[in-house]
Image (cartoon, rainbow, N blue to C red; front, side, top):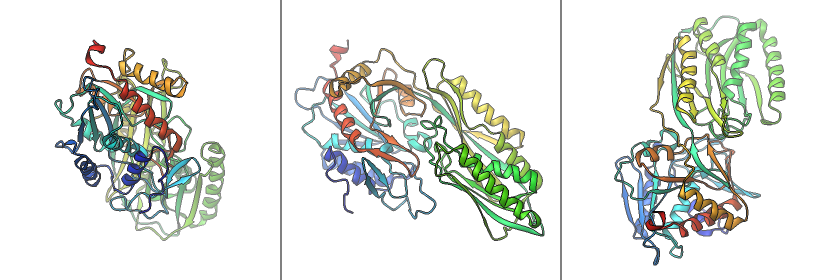
Length: 490
């Protein structure tokens, strides 16, 4: 495949990113990208090992004169969020991502780009190859399954890493240095339901909610974006109560860490209320387009005739589902009292799927504090337990507490000021980073996270700002050049 990214700077990093786009890498299916990373390490004659869970660790010796510097761990994850537009034909298990340049951005054709965190992996591979870079001993760690479970970080063994300085290359805002992150937990709901025959004298319809931006359920949760699951449920609730709508199937959202972009519902209404339903849907579309006119200008709610479904939900099952979805919180729950404009606690109503005789609803909760996380988890759980559903919680992952005395923060901030003649922002992030787990497993690890500018992560609108990639690369090289010796730290 032609490399349309050829000529972008730094050329070596972009070449590797283009190659990464050709390698399928869904979460939990990282075999192909792992083989690719290992093959690059072997080609460069670098020490490489793969642990039992599938994480890759490559060691590169120091360049001459830098042998006494502290070992630095450069960390990213090899998997990507696999989201596509409903009209895009793409098999994430086999097809390459198709990047293209749109003005100052790199985007993908109808799918997520995978810059999260393919650009971090590309930087690692470029560091492995480039022999002109000045650096001490490097440990290049690429973890598996960050996006759907932090599985690689969870299963790191205490003897896997030697370094105690870590550069996490998985942030998405150039000029921002992250020194803390939220912890999180998933709450997955299973709700049994009963089926009934479709009532006589009804008209069948398919409701569609589409055109939303989606986005990251941590980074973007405070940006006023629409959630397709919540929007479609508003119409179902109104039509159920006013027109006797009956629901056959509801499908919305996809991944736990993405805000739902699209939702679809198969419904029937009494034939003599057909025109009333179409009028209600048209008015509802106008209402929500007005509400979201600034943040979601492409939002559409449409209704079209459909074939009669095989069944509808029983009245009781439908009431329990629609009412609990309406009551389920989504979005920001609490803002930080310490950090201006920083989300402390949030929850995401991520996905809804009908199975044979049950409905699965996926939600995820985040908070900078353990008590806040527990509170919002309980909030979501109580809503669905009132509806008679079963709620199962994931293992969760810890937050990363900021370290005001961080040596690597001082180095990175000073390097940024020197290179770009401006002050970077030092922040915590509401998204979950692997730093929380890594810090728990490797006490004393001094960590920082940064990256180029990526917008629309976890959605087909994902895009990478070209000029910031060169800044990201130059900052990484300058930081590695200025890593202290053990004596300097002491």
